Length: 347
Image 1 (cartoon, rainbow, N blue to C red):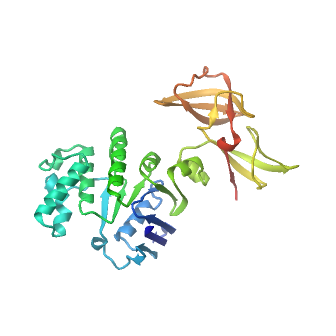
Image 2: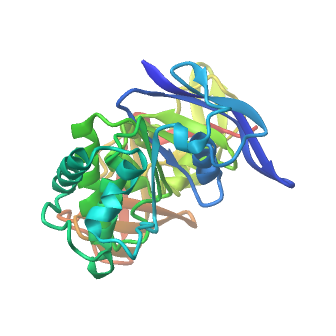
Image 3: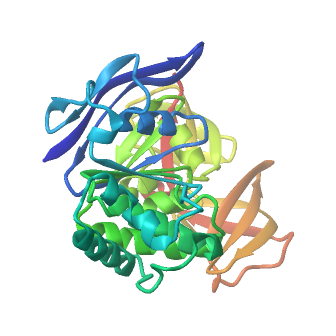
């Protein structure tokens, strides 16, 4: 059941529209990622949910009741930020215990809860450590323990791993997902990193310029981006202009790189997305792309190639074990039209 409801939120700062009619629900125990570029309104939305700023219009409901008149400290929500925000004059124990002391919890219960949280985040023997001596990853784990210690109804994380290096981010996002799952913690995770969102979220809300572009599971959003913006944000750049023609019951997209059978009733100008991950290095499919193999970049488990087709550059990805021809040679790629091609209408 939905426990948090965001209803028709609008917020402007002068002439800058930060939120333009945002609505969505969050179920109990669900992890929802707000994904989008910097400046799209993600952090403003989080601040409104937390009660740190007021919306111009709309409401935030918890179990169907408005939080409009509830101050931030009484909403029982937890916040975790990119910059850790640990108290430098306090040791690890005091940092994690801070919120519990503010709630006037019994000292024995505070000790038990702090130890439990430190064990949960993988730092069970760190209570007496000086936070200034901790690594970035350790500080972020302490920040997570502090946010979770008061057992918040909702945990909100604003780019929590943004200041860490890639290897540490990849490790922590897996651990964070496990911890939130273990606690059945309802959470909203703000990020501009698609890999983080895909790794941690049950559901993703893609935001662009203050409005929602798409809502869905990580798998649904990646396999079927709802708009050109979403596809580009997911680093799918193979867009080709085309015109849909329906003649004698046959529908085709006429493009500079070839004609493609399309299943749509639309007739007119379109853009075709050629998915970079849905091509095969052969000529066995009914749809073949032929072009010049221009570049290759290796990315560990995968390799990305650039193909020039009728003066249009396209990018494709293959497993790193796939044998590639020599640069500069003409190659053929097979495409499955149902998997590799998506049509976006141009309004």
